[in-house]
Image 1 (cartoon, helix red, strand yellow):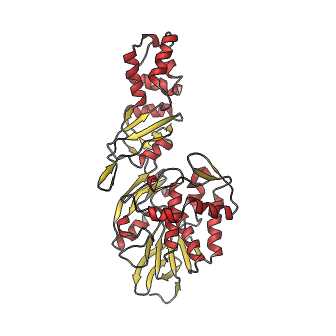
Image 2 (image 1 turned 120 degrees about the vertical axis):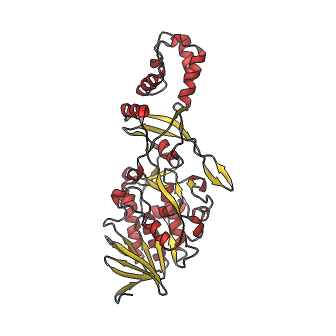
Image 3 (image 1 turned 60 degrees about the vertical axis):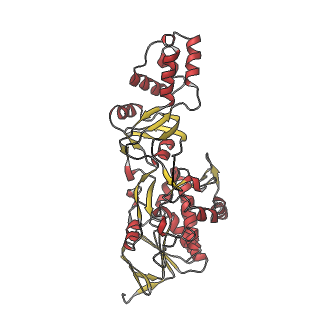
Length: 408
């Protein structure tokens, strides 16, 4: 061990949402904590989240809103630290907030308020914050964990990995956490981008380019096999939210949500008008306004540009009065069950989170501690627990960090 070593009770590597919250909570319990991050500006992913207002939790967060190889793993942590518990911290910091939709809570002001709250909590708890510091190696000796960095060597009997996942690499995201897990013999569930726009080739890509910027209310599901639970395969949920056409394919909340379940080769099933009875509406229009063009009538139900493109794709033309009821039914089925196959996703560049990570089989669900390595903990996005879009991943960051903070 080097002659000059800074000694602490706990070292936390990663000073994002989970790392900062863990450090402040552990510090409040009297632990001497140092938080190390390679970024010069701490909490950058928080700052850019939610359009700059940070969707910091979801009031309805429950285990069913999370994807994991072990769906029950998150229950203990989510129960021990709820959205209301985090709201109490927000209220104490005098941060005002609002519910946007579906239980999603945002700051009234800037997301920087959440970053400032977390950093202030660390400062008040005596946490040593080391920003712009690269971790060169992590080792375990009898005296504890030895972390060698560009700013010196640190030693502590407990080490917490809170480095997040590979999503949004432009702000410094890496797979450091998974590498540490593998170094110490823990399993890793193969990471992949999640909450990410999906891409297409061929006719659908060309349609998307033409419609870039057009959005519609949609109910989206996919043909994925689903997640194994209790020896049975659980069918992926369907999501009804906005769908957005882009130059590369499809995005919007409904697509980001289903992307966490979609796998290569799966098809998407999209109800393009979930609030409408397309057949009934077209039939009624035909019976009273038969001379109107089919495309025009469809444009009264769907966004006009989308109606134009889908008519072109299926060769739908002529006046509505010329369409038989059977033909109207066939068209309405295609509108309510538009089936298309993505070629891939936009990857980590635009993914909001990483799916997969440190295998929960190797962790204690109540403490986030590694079962086989005394004193080693993993929290936040690094762990194989991934939330839906809408504040769920932040709630997992707070809950998993709190669980570990009570155990160190």
